Image (cartoon, rainbow, N blue to C red; front, side, top):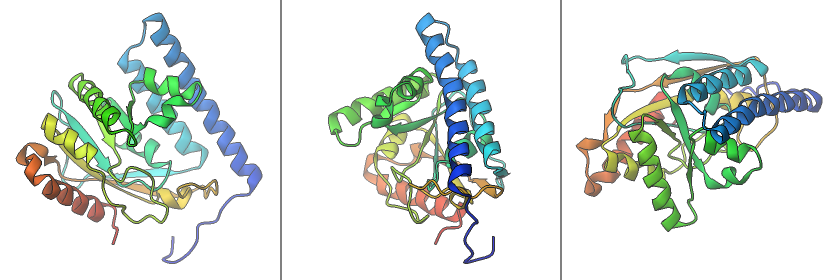
Length: 249
C-alpha cells in the first residue's frame, strides 16, 4: 500500500458475510471444546489444533496473507515460562500470532469477554486467561492463575498496551504482564505486527480484504535479568523492541 493511501473497504453486505462466517467458525471450535471439558475429555493438543484451524479460516475469509520474519532465528523455548508481547491494533492480530509462532499459545484477555454467553465458556474451557484490570485484588488472583497456566506449558500472549490502539500508534504499557514476567522469570519474546490494521482497524467493521501482514519475531528478552526495582527498564526495553519490529514511530 502506498504511503498515505487508504485501503479499499468492502460494503456492508460483504462485511456482514465476513462477520457471520467468522462467528460460525468461532462457534465451531467453542462448542466442542466446552463439551470436551464437560465430559472430562479435553486435551490441550485438541485445543491447539482447533485454534490453528480457526485462525487459518479467519485469515482466509479476508484474504489476509501472513508473512513471518524471524531475523534472529528465535525459538520458543520449552520447559520454562514464555510470554509473547506484541503491539495490538486489530482483531486480526490474534489469528496472525497463532499462525506465526509454535506452542500452546493462549491470550491474557479482559475478564469481560468471559461473561459473553457461549464464547466466554469457550475461552475458559480452551485455557485462555482472564485479567480484571478494574479490580486490583482480582487482577492479582488472575495473574496467579496465569502463572499456573504457564507452569503447565501454556505460552502466554499479552498485549502490553492493554487494548487495541485506535490509530496504530503504540499506547503506554500496562505493568501487569511485566510483573508476571518478573515473578516467573519468563522469557519475553517481542513481536511486531504490521498490516493487520489495514484490514480491520480497532473498533471498526470496515474490512479491506486481500492484503498482507508481516509478523516480525524479535530477540528473546530474559526477565530474570531484571528485578522489581528495575521493572521500568524492562518495560522500556520491550517497548523499544516492539516499536522497532512493528516499524512504529
